[in-house]
Length: 468
Ligand SMILES: [Zn+2]
Image (cartoon, rainbow, N blue to C red; front, side, top):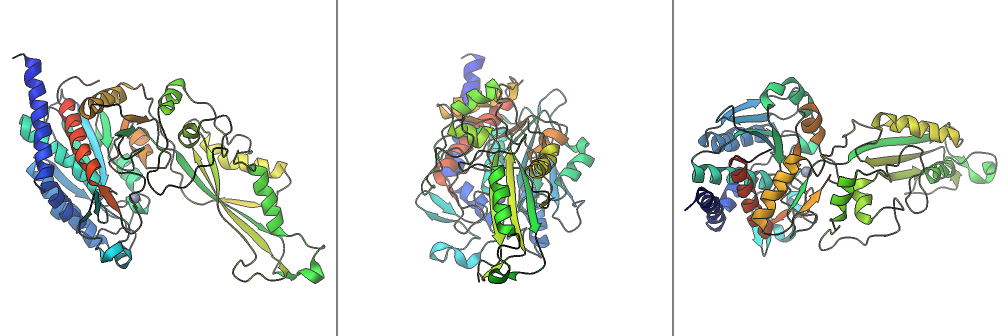
């Protein structure tokens, strides 16, 4: 037997071990313990649960695998703590940083079908219901269990690991950027590999390397004090709702094409275009009908959602829609939203809108930018770490996987890619119709079973000595 064959056998042994972990019910039981922690970070008084999740569940689990665990308080007052865990094997070995979030959104306890509790797993066919099954406890449970299977099979990992678990992701990750920026020495890694979000379709193993950025802003126009009788004043006063509608119409056309100068981004690197060309948008059951004529005209559907900037009116109000009066409203407000890709001049987005409105005679509309932007990130699909990960996942899956240059949605990925300077690879274990953030959140049993194997194979290969 050659050395190569021995190694193949051991990889297979690790995959068999993780399959047993799933079949024996141990995966369900590990996840069930984690789901039971009511770590609802968007509700008040969640501190005890957030701390307890890190201190009484994840730390002991990782300590058993010889991790050194430290719980750090959040530099942002009132926000939940971070767990940082290190496992070191040697200076000459690669170091991977992985990440997850222990917090979930509110359970909405009475709103689940069939009186299911959000705080324990209920299995119905292929679906495992419970708050956090998909977002994100199920996903980090899969990744850590796979790490354990490799360690137990090989006796060592063959690489160093840094685990970061935050407990505020569902509140917009307060303090994450500052914590990573001031503690860069804790996160000296070669590559970042983590799991969150959906696969492109349930059956298709997927990786993505960044996300679109998001800019939220508000446009307000006040024309006069108070509403005025339209019989006495109509024809004499400006209607701010009409002016706002024209302003919006100047920003985007009837078919969703952006008209603000500088806001479109239609240049895609060839490697990104080639990767997107292999993707097929599929939301799974119950997804809405796609309008093939909406958005950036000369792009494919997939290029529009993964490779272009998209503008949405999130809400728009003038007067009182609940009780429409026969009056000219005093003001109008529109809540706008731009998702944007790498290459967009982010600092210029608001100044470009200001210039656009002024040029079109809408000087009176006041623009405010609502909150911190989540920046766009993307790693080249031909980056050596991406090629390495694709090779490993394809080997385990025995079929092609989907490679998304970036997610259509947004993540705090710029903290890892920009602040820590790491190549970032995300391997999602959920799917688009998982009801995360709503009642009836669930994971699919079939995806979990496949994901445990994919991650075990990946961790195995990371320690096998053929990394970039
Ligand atoms: Zn979430």
